[in-house]
Image (cartoon, rainbow, N blue to C red):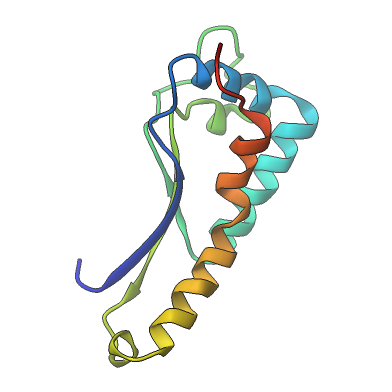
Length: 118
């Protein structure tokens, strides 16, 4: 793919953080907050990906209301900004800053809900 691509991610977590992430996703408050963030980011045109398991991890039912995010070992939101004429102008900075604003909540969620495993 040519052009500029932006992404926000929770990637390569410390050992033990994936379990902490899953407990936060499974919790009502934290899990609903993450689901709303992911929905908003998708609505803004970002693809959600990451390292995914085929099914929810052991200990979580397949019918869990947040079964999809429970499958994540990493969480990435990304989209292409393309390779338009603006790419070589000061407008590129504005577009990147706008994308950073779009993505701000996604990496902040694990910063608040997933503490370093001790």
